[in-house]
Length: 303
Image (cartoon, rainbow, N blue to C red; front, side):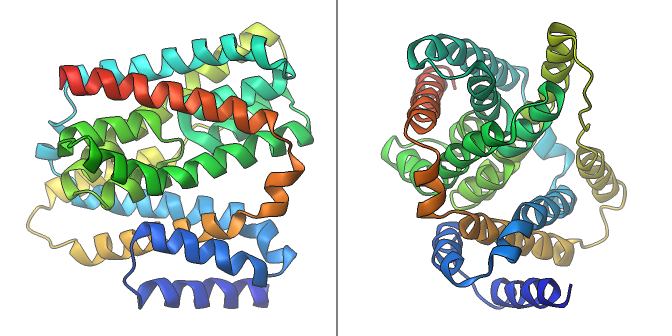
């Protein structure tokens, strides 16, 4: 326990007293991964999940009702398009790649909804094999990390507005951490909108899990993301007590976000990527490219 505590304290101090971009934290985390013990690496998923959930709740304190009004009904149509397009495309690609159905399902759901957390939830529902879960998580985390670098660059290349980028990031990037990281590197406006839409997209795990339970007729459990309730409560509190300055808490939450990104970088390794083979990476990569550029085209036309 002592070494985990020291690890968290030292990581927290580093992120707190430094001022780098999300991309830099990701790359530094990857470089650091070669110098930390396997026991600490085994705890990284827990550290990532915990810091991210706290960060999301805290970031709710900076959202006003004006921010919520940015989520127009048309934005929700784009989220629905992204979900349906990804699930259908994943089913089609599965036929061509000849992957095991369980692995293809995990990769598809991870791409469509919320990355690693969606994979973990669906794995519990479908009683997925451990090797399938590992093979699904690795390429999803790889692409998720790549999005931190690529999406802001592509947004500038295509001259996207804050609104366009917020919607696009929320639809096409896997995990909430990378949505927040990519949009925070672009603008506060796209960060606020991207966060709201990504959390709405994450709620799709509930009907998808229920559908799988019904279809597969197997007993399983899935966790409703309780941190979403905390996020909503933080928004309500910040608007009811609007005279209170929550900037300190928001600043801490942003640092926790960067800390989660730092941990994501640590969780990556060349050996881990080599162990899963090329098919899951190609499958998830093609699926991600398809949903990213199809949604980008629609966003540039209609927003």
